[in-house]
Length: 574
Image (cartoon, rainbow, N blue to C red; front, side):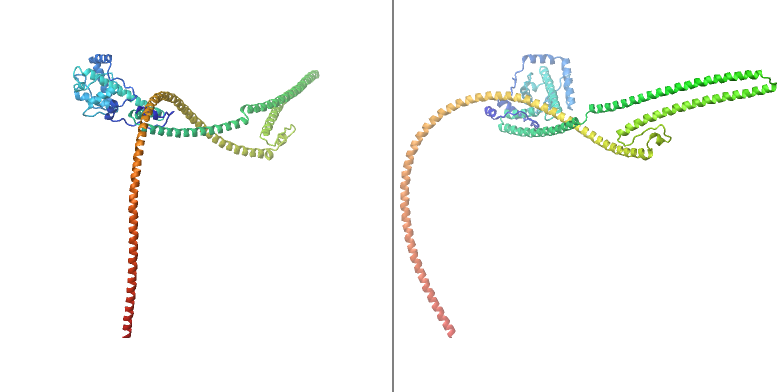
């Protein structure tokens, strides 16, 4: 049976999306399977270790250890909402102990029979190779002083086993359902194999192979979609590469700045030339000032000479006083005139400096405006004129007639372009965010696929090992089958001899039967010919009878006709 099952099993590389394992079989089936079926699951011997028994008995005979163990057991029972609670002193009753054992077995999905719960407990401990020995006689009086430490050790061991099962189930539940599909498939397939259900094993293999093919198709579709997205991204990248890069844009800006620097250098050179001209003007003004001071000194000397000549002349007191008053008025008027002249000269100097500064600023602004207008592709250029009197003549362009309409049309175009660019920017930002999210999802998908591929490779290694073991088993089976074939060949030769003898005897019987059948056929043929002769004679007799009947009927019909005619004649004649 096992050889046939091993020969029919198919090796699979890996499966995903496997269904949950079937519920555990009944207790009777487990007992029958454990006692009758020889499986590959290497159950350990049910004989406990004497060292373990002695240590367990020594530990659980201590009262403090018993109380701590009972506390941990009660905590586990309370965590599962069980109404049972064991007491430390005195020893708990038999009912509480039995209910505790049955409840602990139910937590590990092993349901006991109410009548044979002690046999179920012993069987469960034996099937798990529990190192603690527990018998039915012990369970009849578990609260006795010599049985209670061992029973308490078994209860503590069952609590630890239940916690271990809960930890495994929680860890398996936290993992994705597709991540442990191979293990669930292996468990189900191995359970079918142990039970001898070879058809179920083949059906399970075909089912999981179909699911694997479907998942392979979906993964291929996702990979093709990701490749399409990658191609689109590469096309966008090529478009970005073909367009002007940041370096080229910066170089263009740098060239524009260099042009501006050159223009500013020309402006600085023009300004330095103008400053030189202004310095020359200032030197000329200083020379004029020196000449004016010399003239003032000459006038002052003339005034002194006039004073002396006046003093030499003979004047009366009234004339002198009048002249003094007139001289004082003249000096006062001269001082006021000089102060006013100095003020007006200072104001004229300040106005000239302001005018020159404003003119230079106007020139600078005109150059900047001309550069900006060139960049904006506006066919308007300012030409500053020093001799102009009206703003249009100074700037060389009428603002309202040419500049303002051009700037308004440019503003409208810039506004429309900015709105379009803003809309394009929003759409591009949305596309970029969507593409980023798609790329992240594809990356996560590729990571999960890579993990699945790694798991499948590891599972392939395990499957290869299993195939090698199966091949070795198959080799052994081939050898046994070859030996059986040899024996069958020998048996076949014996059977062929017996068949030849039986063939000869059957041929003799056949000849006798053929002779007998020929004799019977001849006798039957003679009877058949006699029967045919009698039938032909009877046919001739019947034909003659039929002719006689026909002639009699014809005679009768003619007689009846004549009688009828005679009756008609009598009827019509009378």
